[in-house]
Length: 159
Image (cartoon, rainbow, N blue to C red):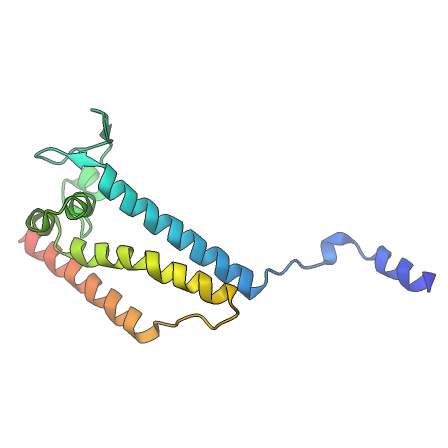
């Protein structure tokens, strides 16, 4: 009996492979997605901007630095330019203003908003031992449509 115990103790710890269970990995993924989407939504409601392009932190005059490298280096908008301002305007109820900054912002905002109940539902299903929802084709089609809208509006802006 002691020989088998010694044999187990003789295996170096480095040889043991730590494998995260699929359930735990899935829980972590859904928690991260829930946290990120919640942070984006909270920022959309908290941030503000006056006419122009400068976004300000709430209750201050501190401007958030511009984030588009393409615009900074080449002076040209990228397909995602205006999304921050579009999200802020949507969060504050200005649909027309949001469309003016980036038409795909409405679609992306809806996706981010959808993440909150969806991820909570996924987390609940995992905890209950139920299979998670699989959006598969619907998700691929939706993101392809959003990507197409982003590219089309970008090309139109460039022309």
